[in-house]
Image (cartoon, rainbow, N blue to C red; front, side):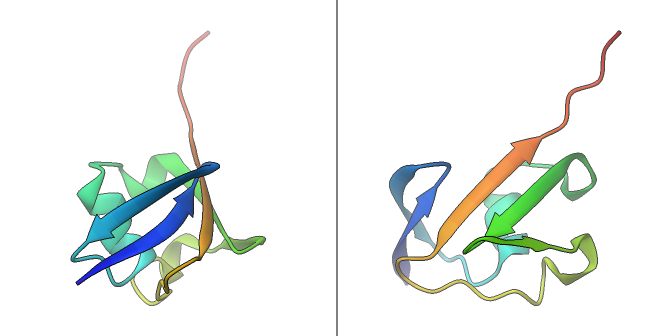
Length: 68
């Protein structure tokens, strides 16, 4: 079932996604290298697979990049 969410300020439709963890896997993002804000609240990494998404939810995903 597809739902529409706002991801990093853009409305997107995602299919087969129930949780934040599902979304990260769909987008091929390593959960150890991102921070996720869900509806204004930072989601602890150990809760990614428990935090359920609903239509209209707002998410911000920040990807950490190493360098020097």
